[in-house]
Length: 585
Picture 1 (spheres, rainbow, N blue to C red):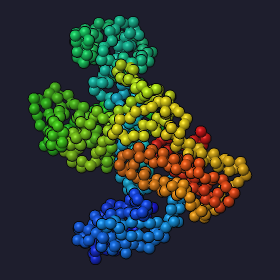
Picture 2 (tube, one colour; picture 1 turned 90 degrees about the vertical axis):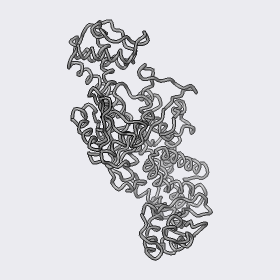
Picture 3 (cartoon, one colour; picture 1 turned 90 degrees about the horizontal axis):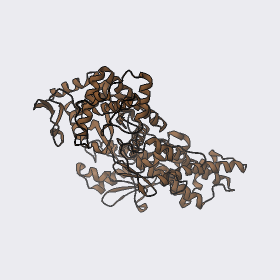
Picture 4 (cartoon, rainbow, N blue to C red; picture 1 turned 135 degrees about the horizontal axis):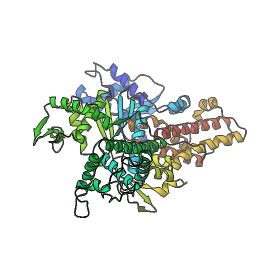
């Protein structure tokens, strides 16, 4: 209905040029909102107030001209000018029933739109370092990114989902040396495991598989691996320098075989991550390797193009990008004095590559600790000739798990974190997806494990899913009584729906396409979650207030038409969230 009213306004404004308006109005300016106060009608627009200055018109006079130019429509019962120039719309009663017919006709397509106009959007999300299993923080980014991609797809965007594999650099080397040291232990070597290594249990199966495949061909004396390495912490040494020494020694001892361990460990971790995400219902069009990016020469090419922008300079033997020109708090090194390229150089090349692949907009889902990277990456893209608006970042705040009111402590390297798989196994995929999305991504999330597992109306995912199952139950009861639902009769007699609760349900249903559109464009999947809770509440309240299976066939069919529309909208909404819509609970 909102889009229909906006169309009527656009048609009216078109007829007012040039008599009342100096030039055609940008369609994006024509916005209709739901009235907050029913006394002001059902919908309203302030378009006359926004156009009055440029048109050199009194806002009320312009609003009156717009109203007079509106095409005749069965949608409207009345239109009036109010206040300083608001246009208030009152809908005809039958107009409220049109969305119910739309739901029945469109089914799974109800709520979808073409507002994105085919714009090519890449959503890159999760992209966790392949140094261990997915933890609960990664799960939030996975749920958010997957749902945002679904919403963009539902609003007419061309969506591409990508996972960036950080498989080059120091962290992946630390993973490899951690696996190698456990392998040496399995081969009988006495190893003092580094404090900065990955000590969690998940390293052991990888080391065992490495031993199973390679036997003792990679075995070297443990003292040769540690010889000359700086002392470790906390024995008066530096944990970073110590493990870097172990990596250097391992490379020297093993040569190219160390890289084979790197790839072996990476592939083992990636296989686990892929499986975890697949079971979570999160899939990607591409898994993009940072290592392959560097080997392709793309980093060198991107830096060469960046040099042409005049925003790269040399200082202390290193090459720096003038990111302060783009809002960063300091300039950033892209090539160190020893010739080694930085992580930032790879980030520039990766985003440059993504845009060169034809995407109009890049949306990255990052952890909140990466907020400082936004300005520098956007600045590099601008320096490379792309608009700053081609790059967005959605920053995910932290997740805290609570059990019996107590917060659980987590730390990845120490191995005392809760994995996404553990969480899914405990509360289920549906609760995971729904709970992750209940709050805005830019707010910290407290995840209550007991609540997520409870089968009560206090559990929001149970409450919404029960709305879907409740309608299915009523349909089974209808059949059990030997009664048939006549959809044609129900649609023909929708005017019989007159109670306060019925109008509340209808009003909620009509909002669904607007909610989907705004959730996509504002990057706010949580607003869809809140909407579904409100819709479920309106259905449950209606169920408790009125009987749906009544003797009056026309009224019964009308009410069944209404609740089937709710069921379809709940199913569509849960589908966008990646949550199941059960037939029974």
